[in-house]
Length: 109
Image (cartoon, rainbow, N blue to C red):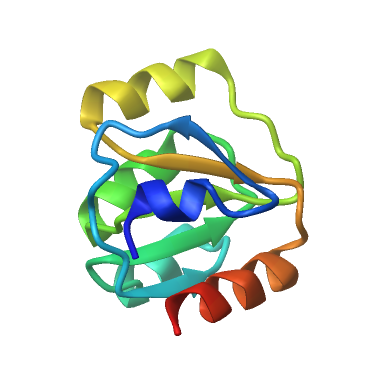
């Protein structure tokens, strides 16, 4: 599944997709940035409610396919601008993290 395909699923929407054809090979859920940095795998879709610019640094280090901002959290224009500059795919959902995880898991089967 590509990031673009994920962004088109019900309850998911594109924030910014500079690399929409990037493949998603799995998922990771977490908000403790140091934990995510050490455990998320390259190609994962990372689900979080964190909304600061540090998320983008972790996304880059972990080489995730995209960051899914869950539970209706809204990102600032500054964060979106940095994501665009660093070419990090961002998707939003109003779903709770658990439900977003279930939908991602089902879509990857």
